[in-house]
Image 1: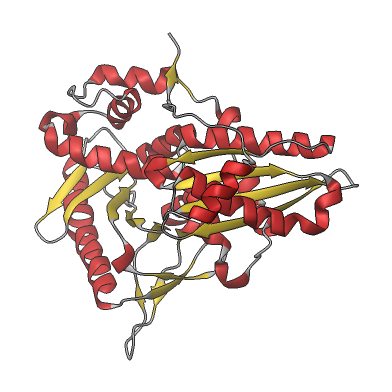
Image 2 (image 1 turned 180 degrees about the vertical axis):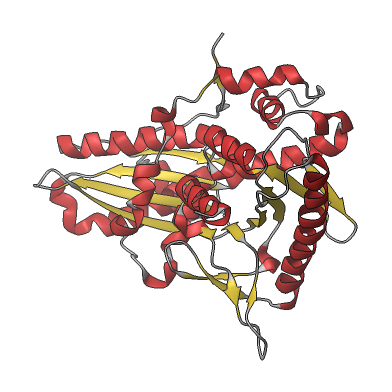
Amino acid sequence: MSLEEETAEANSFYFLPEFTFSNTTFRPAAGTELELADGVIWLDDRAVVFQIKERGVEETSLSDQQKWFKNKVLKQATRQIKDTLRYLDANPTIVAKNRRDQAVPLEKSRLRELHKVILYTCEGPYAYSPYHVSSSVGFIHIFRSDDYTGVLNTILTLAELFEYLSWREHHLTEWPSAQHLPEQALLGHYLFGNFEKEPSIEDMAYVYSMQDNIEEWDVTGILHKFLDRSYEGHRDNQYHKILGEIAKLNRAGLRPFKERFKLSMEKARENIFTLPYRFSILRNDCGFLFIPLESKFRNDRRKALVNLTHACKYDQKVSKCIGLVCLADDDGWFTIDWCMIEYPWKLDTKLEQNLKNNFPFRTTKSTHLSRYTFSK
């Protein structure tokens, strides 16, 4: 398997096939077929573009390795990233097939965050630069392929990959000495979070002492089944919007999501009345609502879902809210319906009064959600 395919499979596994693109060929108007990049991750207004270089076995001497890195990575891959940005600028919409083979429009005008990454294979001890600053395209991340795999195995979520790349760019330019550190030291410094301190080799210890507690927050199983459980199904890929908001959660946000999802299933199985569960992530301006419903309300579940999601959105004063309703089926499975409501929040005196007279939710409180813990 080529490094390009290995990277696509890893990105798809960790970050969902809906947002991962490996076949990015497109045909501009009256033009020949072009390739946008060797790989792309695209989530709403954030993206990562990849160029991937594999070194042949013939470059064995240190001198040959250095020449290969200079010609293939610093020069050729940088030119290809420049082409990627030029294609995005010249084509308002580029339609690419994701790893689910769905056609998705990619539009640079929507981006507020774009990371450029070069991955390469490497044998031997020669230490290459972890980044390159191009006069035409700016900062470019450079990763050995095994280092990039190590990053994925550690941070595990797409939200944290975007954050790590932003942090990595800032710290490698802020602290020039950091470019001589191994990737594990940079990653450990990010995990510990003391961003005012210069990264050091000692930061590697945080990578090995981090407790991922993955069973508390991993929702991969839920998300991989999402398409089949979504009432919108394949229609125009509308479910991508809901899936995307969940994908924007880091592990601190995924923890309450999974906890409330499981509680909803448990209460639905008990088939007794219980108030919905909910939480909001203010930095994402998005609320989440989980409604366990008694089986006798099965035929009215859509109405309950939409009405309560509107009410939750208003009460939490957010512009987006994702709701799900959960009912237990006779065969031991569950019926789960989803919806997403999005529009700017504004005062609604009628809804305000309705909530005052009949408040259908549990009370909430503000709290800081910590992400990483470390063994002593």
